[in-house]
Amino acid sequence: MSADSPPGAALDRLECIDVVHSFCGHLDHRRFDELAALFSDRGIFRMGPSEAAGPMAIRAMFDAAGSSVAESRHVPTNHVVSFDGDHARVEVVMTVWDLPTSGPPQPALMADARFELERAGPGGSWAIALHDNVVLAARSR
Image (tube, rainbow, N blue to C red):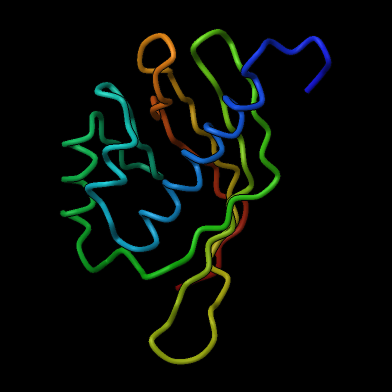
């Protein structure tokens, strides 16, 4: 942030990072209704070859995955936030840890994750317009 940043830029930056952390927390604790609610009406979730558009379809995608979604913890780091008007991009390095039923957590993968956010109306909250990622490394499960 620079001295000539617009008023409210720091708050917007924190709100955008909070959306990413909320996404991770809802995913980790299997709160898929809350996770889907973070997306705009046209929001897109991409994971590998799978894609869903809109909160209802995103929720349905997790329902279809069911128990195949491993219990895990998503740890976003190295946040880079940029703005273009009422749109923001948050790029993070996402490390995912599997939580086996016995034994210590195991590193599962590392990815470059991207969250495109849009503001819901003037002065409104930020919503996810697009989430996708590129897996950098993964262990066999």
